[in-house]
Image (cartoon, rainbow, N blue to C red; front, side, top):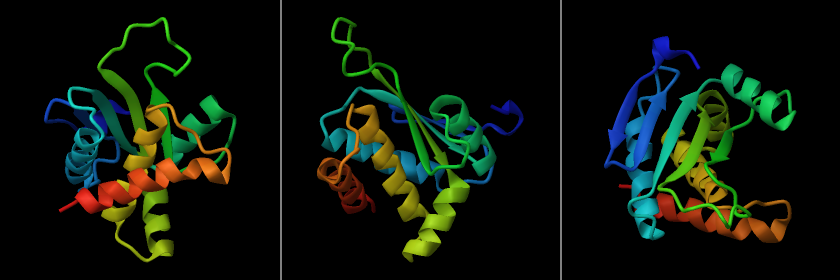
Length: 155
């Protein structure tokens, strides 16, 4: 990633924020709300990295790691997988990568603010870090619950 435009902030020692775009004015707000969601879910003391990128960067990551040569809204990279049962539990849950470009387009389509869309995507990414996936409609409920909860917790 381009370190020339990187901004890093630590939020309550649980979330490191990197704004690769250099223009995401909502980054700290999203991290604070995500910290509240993590606390609400009993994840005090756990850590993650929240990275805001543009569509070009997320497309590169999506292509290289998922073999999908297109931008996406959010990617999650867990530090460990649920099947890593013999591994010790570590405090860092993983990385959440959010495309601000795609989030802005989705916010406009949905008729809500960019900050709302970024919160939804952050909660979605966290849910993936916790080992959940949504290959079927039935498995979407935990994602919807976490996405609704972060909006309820947001000031």
